[in-house]
Amino acid sequence: MKHPLRLLQAFTLFLAGLFGFFVFLGNLMDYDSNFQFVKHVLSMDTTFEGNALMWRSITTPWVWTVGYIGIIIAEGAFAAIAITGAVKLFLRRDASIASYDRARGWGYTAYGLGFAIWFIGFIIIGSEWFAMWQSSTWNGKETAMGIVTLWAGFAVLLAMNEPAREAETRV
Image 1 (cartoon, rainbow, N blue to C red):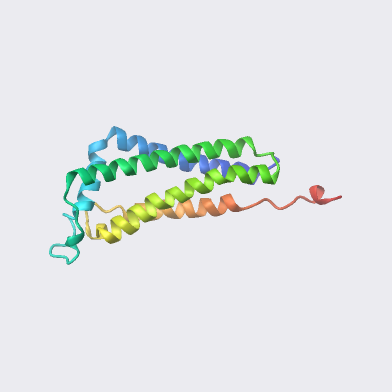
Image 2 (image 1 turned 60 degrees about the horizontal axis):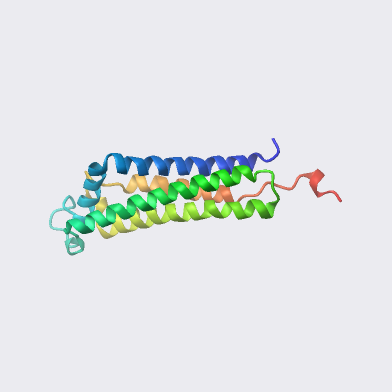
């Protein structure tokens, strides 16, 4: 195997994209279940009773819908970018470093978008701004944290280069 790290990088990016695709499909196929999640988080109706943060709640149904559609579109884009990037990485697995590095941009874009969705969207905005962490029913903070941790590890893996082989460094 000529470039095992490159194969692993393509494979992990593909798996991230596959995950995103399944999440995207799940949101389309079971729209109402996941819409309820967005509705309850934004309306803050299952947070601690009497908490002082209720002024942040959004109880306007069209805002829930726009927010949820935005999440679905972002997850679909994440999946498409990651899978496209994985294919490009795989096809360039034996290419020069410069050519391979250009293909890595797709992975960095995917993981950046993944951070935006699951860290900014679910952890910062959902969990902290809308106090999702207070809900025993509609709390996705731990799930989002696990996903973000994976994207961080995969992004670091994507940034790694194989050491130059002795035969390749000889003049």
